[in-house]
Image 1 (cartoon, one colour):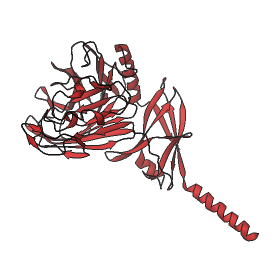
Image 2 (image 1 turned 90 degrees about the horizontal axis):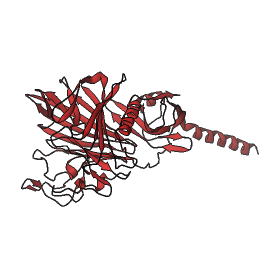
Image 3 (image 1 turned 135 degrees about the vertical axis):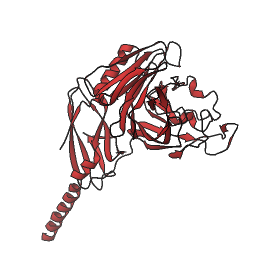
Length: 412
């Protein structure tokens, strides 16, 4: 009997020890806004969490909201590692979520809600100014061939693409280097299916209405939506002439996707620059974030394409962020089809908002070689798409509040 009791005591301490191995961090989130924050992206400094909680690793944690495990992701943000997850918060609500970590904690396989890709011809057969081949294959990182130019059929839909369920974007990985919009009529990830048979760079399918939507924006020689440039010699200079370009899919979900592009020897006037661009998108959002790194320049410039039948307007807040925007009949889906586009910039980096014959322009001053801005679009044929300029303004004003970070975070 005595040995039996000793065994029970030992077993109790063993079980207690095993349970004690899993530790918790309580994260209190308070929505200070007067409206529901649906799919709000919370970002935490994962390096600080690890420092204050020895044993926490990128592979041994989960975040729970009651009985629900929230999809989350750890990602590199320059010289920091960050943790991101999405949460829903009612107006003025305070909610506590829990980070649980330990050697036996495993993350489930989350549904991917964002996607980034770069798909190209797998062969280097080239003649008559076209890359030849009957298929495209996804790649993670490539050096762009020096002979690559527009409409040579090297890349599926002409460059990298990124998307949430709500919208898709792409930029042309050639001398144009401008950004375009895929409007969606369904809330799904679908870029992996777009343009798979467009192998000859002629009459590409996505220029016509598909079941899912289409390319809804005309870019031409403009800044498109949020494209990268520099203002010099009294003009906008796109990232056109470079010594070399590397493009990499650095993240593709489940809740954040990112594309990194490195431009070496970008020629502007008589000077050359090395530029790094990171473009990212988060689950539940139509915002694309652009993070630029460059040295020895007084400005980086971006903006929006001018189109007839649109109204330009801008915010004038005293906060950290403001925007310029256009709304009207600027969609390629039909002469009466309406589309809104907008660009968000930091007031602390603004040099000026101006224009030329084809663009509305925002000049930004780098801070320690860094520039950050966002762009977004809203198409009327989306599910619950905005149908008026007033609805578009409401969306943009709510987005401004989100960028001002209306959620206070307290980690216990």
